[in-house]
Each structure stands twice: as C-alpha cells, then as structure tokens.
Amino acid sequence: MQRGLVAVDRTLKPVRATLEQAGYTVVGPEDAALGHPIAVVVDGLDDKVLGLETPLTTAPVINADGMSADEVLREVERRADA
Image 1: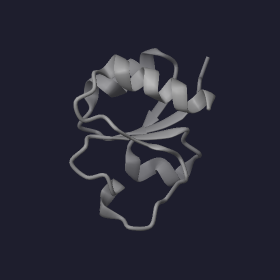
Image 2: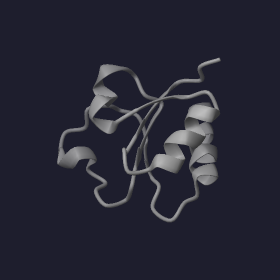
Image 3: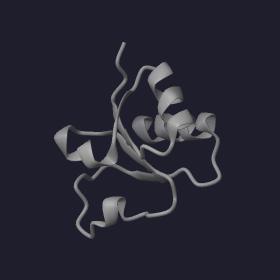
Image 4: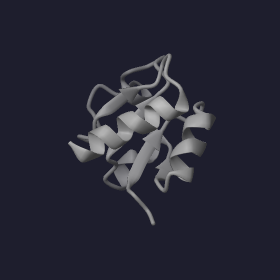
C-alpha cells in the first residue's frame, strides 16, 4: 500500500530506504513539483531546496541534519497526519 509521495535529497540513502520500506513513494527534491509530496526531506546543507528562493511545493520541509532515518520517518508520519 502506497502511503504518499515524499521528496528526499539523494544523499540521504538510509532515509530513502526507510521511507520506501514504510510504503512511501520517494523521489528526488527536483521532482517534487511533478506530484504533490506530503513532505520534502533535505540534508541540512541547503534549506532552500535546490537553492531556489521560490518553493516548488507547499509541502513541509524537514531538515534531516542530525536525525536518524527512523526519526525522519516519524516526522514525515507526524506531518502527514497533521
């Protein structure tokens, strides 16, 4: 069962794998505008996704810096339920 679309920075491989195992469809941030992601997860190096000043989506941005993959999953689930 697919739980929703989440855009995840490509450098966050463990996060991507954890979200996919939990049933989410995972795409890169550059593909966020192609669908309606429930969240965008970035690696903390650049909180302006792809350096763009104008957001491509209204989905919440989660800064994964210092978080485990399971913590990111819980945050995505919390935001999806909100």
